[in-house]
Amino acid sequence: MMRESVSTTQYRIIIQGRVQGVGFRYFARRTAKSLGVKGFVQNKRDGSVLIQAKAEKLTLKLFCDILRQGNGYSQVRHIEIEEMEVTDIYHDFEIK
Image 1: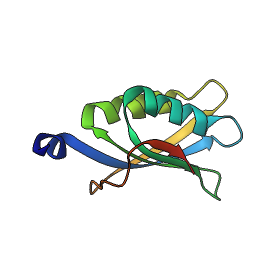
Image 2: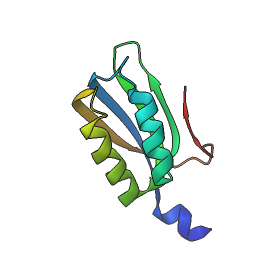
Image 3: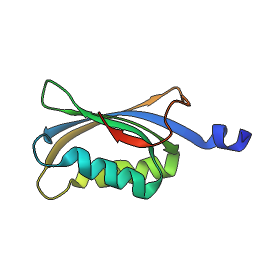
Image 4: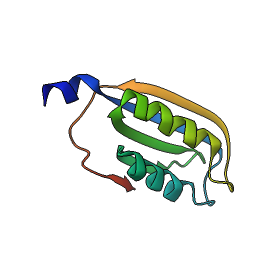
């Protein structure tokens, strides 16, 4: 248990570009679930997408790399990643 808290990281990710109305949140959830990432994804009023994600650092790096590529319908122009304090409130990955 202690080892998990040491290796687990949490990111706040903001993705800008053509990421709303193109299935991006569903793509993010499917990708997160396949990698074992916990957290959520939601659209923001400014047209960007907000993701809070918790997993091991290497897993989060891979998650961000896949998000950068998008789902074929989206066009990611900018991705901002901020490391956060790890919380234990996420038990799954959901769309808000």
